[in-house]
Structures are given as structure tokens and as C-alpha cells.
Image (cartoon, rainbow, N blue to C red):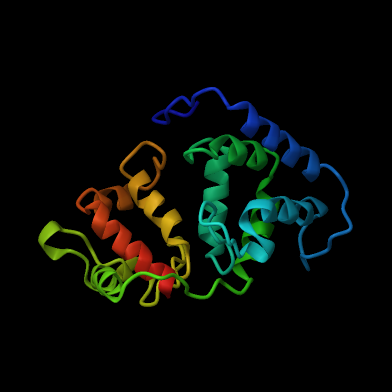
Length: 216
């Protein structure tokens, strides 16, 4: 276990079984050829990923993030963090740790490039105009009185992402809210910048920002 990372609870049987199935699938040949480049392992991995993250990384389930259009540098770093058990996820950490353990650096880069090249999810959601206005205000201007910087200063004017800063536009609001809360826990030990920002945001403000980002 890496220093500073909590010791996980025993892996639930259901999650352990799912991870084993994923690992077996990665080791089994398939006829799918969705990736123009990358190893056979990378091509097979795409189909394992699709079970949760959707075809082309366009997840329709708010429990799992959309990967389509994401910054390759960011995706690569997150996969390596999962592989090194330096990032955790409430409920799915065992699955991500198990799947990523089989991926070498070249395969991770191929996956990151593949998802980065996919058309991202369009904006969606049903938040009220008032909530969207509140979320946009925080995204564009931050919360100066609390020392919270504008989200746009790192994630781009349209939340399109930049290099190591992830794309947030069109991402599921429930997932984003969960991540914003997670920065206040030990789940994301590398999220130093976000820990400082979210420490001064209320749950209502987090939900407003998440709803606005989903709408983009």
C-alpha cells in the first residue's frame, strides 16, 4: 500500500467476481477492431470499458463517467493512479484496481488517445434555470469571498479541459457531485488543488456547478 492511501475494506464478492470477469475478457481474443491503433490488449480493453462507460466512452449511466472527448493526459494519469492503487472510488475501486492492474503504459496511452478522440456526450439534464445560473456563476467567477477560484480558470471557458485538467462539459451531474465530495475524503489523494477549492463549497453549490456542467 502506498503511503498516505487508506487501506481498503475487503473486496465485496460481487465486485471481486466482476473484476475477474473483466480480467478474463482482456485475456480472451475478440473480433472487435474499434481502435485504429493500439495493441490487441488495448482493443479488447475498450470493450471491457464499454460495459460501464458505454460505447465510445459515452456513458448513459450517471454512476460511471463519460470518457469520450476527455483529455488523454488526464485519462492516462487516472488509469495509472488506479493501477497503483493511489486513487479509489466508492463502490467501484476494486473493479478499477483489478482491470487497470493488467494494463501497461503503452496500453493505457492507447486507451487515453482512443477516448480522447471520441465525440463527447452533448449537454443534457433537467436542472432549473435558477440552479443553472448559480452553477454558471461559480464556474465563471468562483466564490471570491471564500477564496474559491473560477472553475473555468483551469478547465477552460467551456469546460472543455486542458492538458492535465479534465473535460467537465456534458459529464453526469451525479458523478461530478460525487467527485466534488470525494475530494474532501481520502479517495483522491492526488487531487491537491481540488481539495483546497471544494473545502469551501457547500453541497448546494457543488450540485449547482455539477448541474451546469452537465448542461454544457
